[in-house]
Image 1 (cartoon, rainbow, N blue to C red):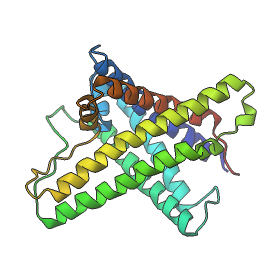
Image 2: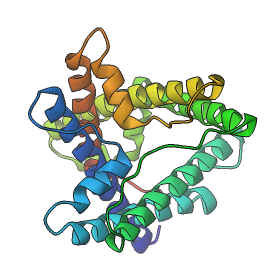
Image 3: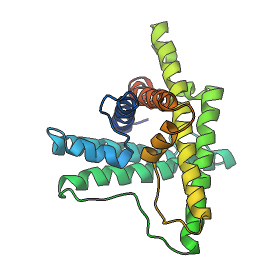
Image 4: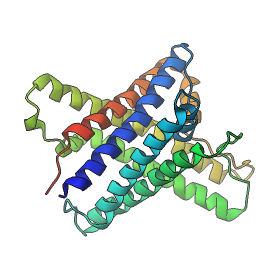
Length: 257
């Protein structure tokens, strides 16, 4: 595989890791009453914008997320690692394309925020007719499948196939990468599963106001559960682990040349 493509993938995984690690850290601080915040991906971008050198950070993050999107498009369209054209391969490549589209949107959003004054916003969709409700249910079902897939990956442990573990001489480091992957995938599966429930419920509730609930609301859902802040804190730690796992992907991922 071309070294330039690998570099793009490295940058992309790092940028994705920053988003998830920061999401986990802020959520954990909120769970422990240390002044953190429950934020989704869009709110993370807005949070970074308000920090010192926020515009520079957004430019770098936007570029990094766009690199991740570009890598996903390459995986989907060019299939450099030979995923194949059978039913399983096609589904996987379509999922890569959708992932690329989502992260390209986030990258563009981060870059456009550099040139735009802060304005109030929200993740809302105007209440509409049957088309909107069907769309919400379809998106919710898609997210449910994604959630289940995260758990399957964690159980099977096949996410480790993407690492050249033999090149990591430190056995303790190999073990840490495995644990990061397991905890990160499980936590991500939990959050995505809750969001899928929000979408399906909104689509089936004809009296719904059309508000779209995301990661922030999923955190609140966990916090208000019978396990209270403990489950919220554990999932937050898991998302932080997923972010660090992305950093490990950036450094140790192997590529099929």
